[in-house]
Length: 142
Image (tube, rainbow, N blue to C red; front, side, top):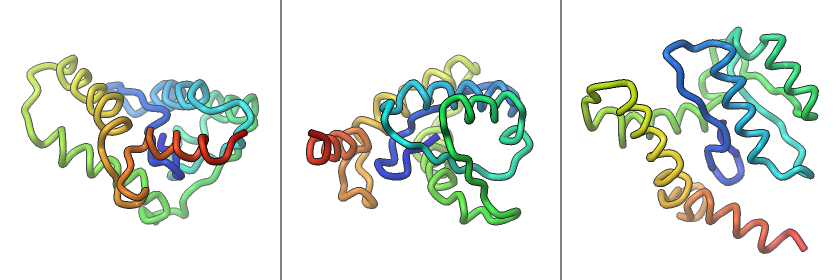
């Protein structure tokens, strides 16, 4: 889950299967990462996991508004699609991982150490997501 303003990955999870537990884990991480006063609109595609009862229950309990792409319109979810393309280009396709644990560790390092903290983005004036977000709070929150 990516913050549209800062491009920071705020919630993510890995699993062999694309199932409800996977997205609930990612959403739970995103909820822990968001400031309490912040209103949240969460956008996704129309996959069945995003309609699961347990997932929607977390939305309601945390006052999150749900938004979904139009059917068959990948451009409605361009930020997420772009992130996954970047992840594959810069990390996944660069090496063959011998185990799932190696791949998981590499993805963790990429997101938490490189992507959010170091990687510069043209859409946010060549700041890293963390720095761009800090800049916003420093300039806008008393």
